[in-house]
Image 1 (cartoon, helix red, strand yellow):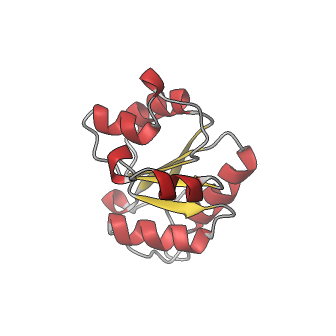
Image 2 (cartoon, one colour):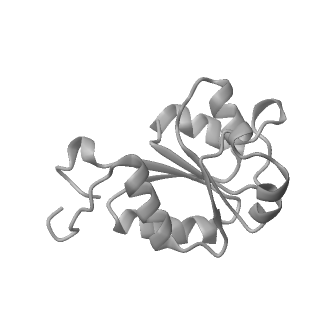
Length: 137
């Protein structure tokens, strides 16, 4: 954990039933000085969101539905939460072609296997998170 970063450290919530997929993204995000929370499913994510108040969410498209059968992005919007929500999934190609992502409250899509460097750079840009030298943190 990096000490002394104050408000500059951003928090990302990973939602994926696959612990290996979460571990890969967690390692890349923590190496880039993000704080990371995890949830194995959307119901667990709802509780975690209330607890950690993430700056962004990365959710597997195939995670189980959140409350009332909604995706986690729809659940965020229904609760008035503007947190950016990115889909991380092998099935994202089918979603992109058939459903408007904006209607689902989705900010963007990352296809598995995930390019962790692209995820980190996208989140840094979106969240205006500075690149932090881990040797100085």
